Length: 462
Image 1 (spheres, rainbow, N blue to C red):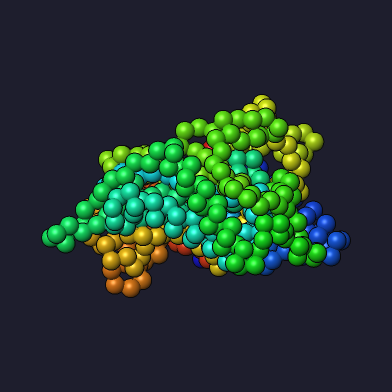
Image 2 (cartoon, rainbow, N blue to C red):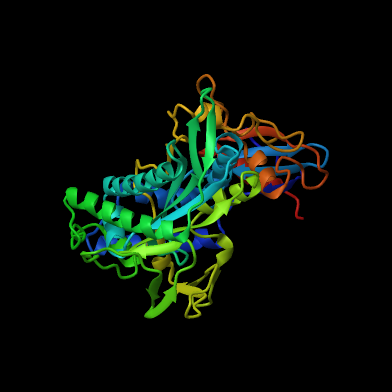
């Protein structure tokens, strides 16, 4: 399938290949691979696939969907994405929008919700990062403590939660912590067998008790698994990823055993004592925060909270490049000492991104309680109606995978998600507003390059 070079068309390529982040990652990745080879160190295959997949993301030479508008000869190319889950802003942005829409529309019932954030001690972050089974065990233990508190306060019943394991902090440092959206209460059946929700409101004193319970339970579980309070990670001799994670953790240290754990309302940041906000407490390095609560009808707020949980590690707009080739990363919030931006070389930035790539084969989203997939009450409490996916003319079936199996819903299209987040009609022509037609899907390879070259050659200048 070739393109006649004699025709004149307006070509609009929507890919992100060649932007600042791609260029910086390409440069830093090449240097990093050279350093690892010289030091006789290696990276796991899934990390290499993550970075190299990102470098192909948004490049039309590796495949694209070809949209056309016949009235005004407008051609739009939508390149394929890498579909990775590490740090790609585009793919993580789609996953963020699609998953939160599913939570709000057909999973989280119309009841009060609350965000619980659990941060583990510095000395445990690298240990959990290197051992996914330990990460799952600590998360399971902590969630059981919160679920037990809800059940006790509601005099029985079962709550539900969805947890996202975040592996990065605001400064791109390695920071393993768990963000959970809990139903702020418990479901229990009444005399007629109908599920009824019993709301529960925690207070700061409850958070203080819970953080002590979580710290003791998690350390006890780790001890039974063979990891004491002073144990550190030692298998970093030939593993480049472990060294990058240790460096990105910003000086982690082993947590010492505390004979009598107590909750603290003051934390030390860069040598300065700072009072913790309400609904927040720490104990032996574990920090628990439960200050964000949403009403039953605040579905827009719930969707914003879900996007915050699933946000990518960095946005492209947060990066600028200096004349010397270094990259300045602007943080969303400044530190207490006034630090508002960080400077990296391309190699340093890539090492930070490599450190936060999640392990292969591990779930980063966990559903528990009445929101679990096999929960008996789930089908009775989930919302019965779904929000409209978008304005008329944005339908399923184009550029999306069809549902597999009976009762399965197809995935949302890019056009639906773009409309939901930005209220932009992605399928419509930017000139005349007419809905564009899908002309062809190029799968990559030599023919794709020939078609792309023909389109670029035939395109009229703007």
